[in-house]
Image (cartoon, rainbow, N blue to C red; front, side, top):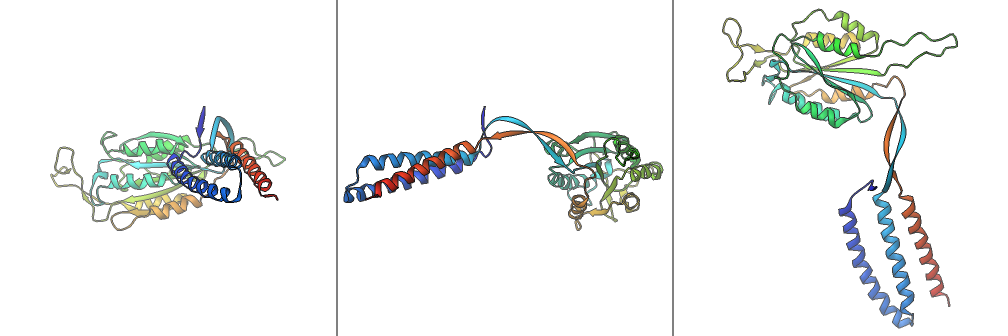
Length: 332
């Protein structure tokens, strides 16, 4: 089945229209000149046909006619980037407009678009942690999952940061075995791994030191994004009003930086803030992009077999024939 690598048919149509107008003007001018010089019309007719065919073939080559699909190996030194997003009820607080979660969603979608050669995965957490999207090269799939994030995805309860970190740790490749006597390592080398934790820092879970040590041993870095402000804001309820504590007081959710700073510091990552004044996603993107892949990965991708060479070669042959005819016609 014939497809096109660059199907910009509007530009081609405009080029054809302009070309036809120029060709009509050229034909009228050459007809007048031919009569004055006594040139026979059939010579001009052959040249016109050759030039029209050559122009059509050049346009076809520019569109990139592709016939069939071939499997091509692609070697990358990519990374695995896990996005761990807090979807607890406190992420509905509006101290970051329009809300903590909605602002984080918008920034994450822009971040995902910057990693075409890396695998991305999405984990949501609150009282528990769930893999929303496993590691994939499909950016569009990750974008779709990010767009569906809501604080109602998981049951309400105390937020735990340990659950998502343990979930990702369980999916990381084990440490490589020691090298053989000749110096060659046995088995695959694990890919470089980054965890991006997007949260307001509220945590009611257990000690994080064991899981952070496990991540550090495997070379995984944790980058944290603190969403919210020190002043905080009330947490809206689905039916209206705000969440209250046991004494009937409105709960004021505040950004808890200390734990997020600990996560990044113990794994060699970085902490940035996201609020109405600061947007640390630019710094985060720079850090992630400078993080080198640990191993070259070879994967096979389906590539359309672009056959532009054939119409291009035919167009060049026709242009060469046109030149030969021109030389013959003007020879005394």
